Length: 253
Image 1 (tube, helix red, strand yellow):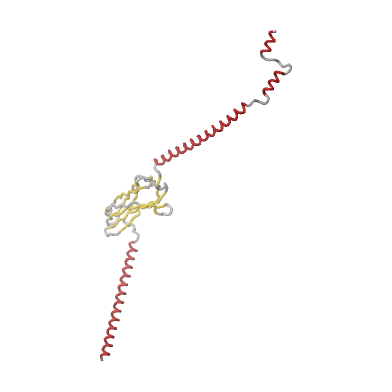
Image 2 (cartoon, one colour; image 1 turned 180 degrees about the vertical axis):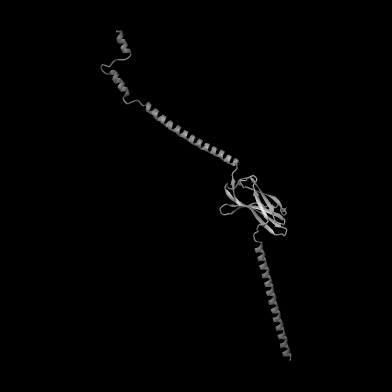
């Protein structure tokens, strides 16, 4: 009897253990399913958030008051005016303005400009003007670039939007003072080169003239071959006329 009762107890324990194990497996599966659902929901939210898009009820206009031709002087602070019009039935709150400079050929980012936070409210059927500034770095090469300017805003339902109100080619040019300085420096450099050439040319000419003078003087100091003997031969030749004093004496006789 004791052996039979022991076996029954062991069977009951085994059944209970199996039941507990089954419950744990089911609970683990439920947790995994919940986690998978949360991850899928997060992925869906991330996909929905993605890049911010513009609102169909926002209209923008861009103006560069100091440089209407979009040719910006290097070393200057550039002012940008963004006109923002709300044509919808909900107000917009402007949260951020930013800009970036890119290579005009491959759109590679060169500079990310400082962000501005105007925190202005544009109610329905109203218009507002936002100001933004960026610095034209004088270290950049004077040439064409791609400038991108954007504005972020939210509506009354806390939906976020972004409008790229300027994305076009601009040109950075050198200031007149820089060009003038370079021109003056170029003239000084040219004068210096001319001066050096003239100096060395004059020194070369002096050396050549000195050598020529020494050569000419040496040749003039040499007596002609047989010069003295020829003079004597003229004097002592038979029938030669005597000169100077001897002629005068003959006249007196």
